Length: 237
Ligand code: SF4
Ligand code: SF4
View (cartoon, rainbow, N blue to C red):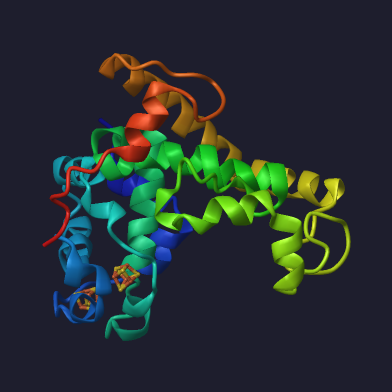
C-alpha cells in the first residue's frame, strides 16, 4: 500500500481543489448528485484531508466517487475555495491507475466508456459520434433511432448538419486524418494514453477474476457486456 495522499498531491487538480475544509456542507447543499445518490461531497473532502490511507483506499474502491456529475456547482460556492469536483477527478484517476476502480460497478464501467466514447475520439475525432451509437446497444434511443442511423446523410442534411461525414464545415463533418493524429499525440503527452492502458490492464485482470471472456479490442466480449449492462439498482439515496 502506497501513501495515497502523497500520490493525490502529485495531481494538480487535487492541489488546486483542496485547501482546508471547514465541513460547512455548502457543497453538499448545492450538489445535484447528493440529491439523488448516496453521495456527499462534504464527506469526501473531509475524509481526504484526514490523510487516512485505509479510508482513502476504501473510497477509491467504492461506488461513491463515480456519482459526481462534474457540474462544478460546488466550485462556485465553497467559502474556502475548495473544489470537491477536482478532488473527485484526482481520486478517479488514481483509482484507475491503481486498479481500484474494478471493485465497484460504476468504476468497472470506465472500461465500457474507454472502449466506446474514449476510442471514438481516435477513430472519428468526436467522443460522441452519432453513427457509433448503435440501436442494439442503445435501446433507450427509441424505435426511430434505427431509421436515423440507416438514413443518416439524408436526415442530417434536412436538420442542417452540413458535410455529414465529409470534409468541410459543419457540426457533423469528417475530421481530417492529421487532426486525429494530433489528438492521439495530445493523449500521449498528457497521460491519457497511459490512463487508457491502465484501464485495459486492470479490466483484463478483473475479467479473468470474474471468469468472463475478454478481448483486446471491440465490444463483443462477455466482460464488456457485463460492465455495460450491470445495474444493481441500489445507487439512489
Ligand atoms: S463547501 Fe467547502 S468548506 Fe464547506 S464542506 Fe464543502 S468543501 Fe468543505
Ligand atoms: S461537480 Fe460533482 S460534487 Fe460538485 S456539485 Fe457537481 S455533482 Fe456535486
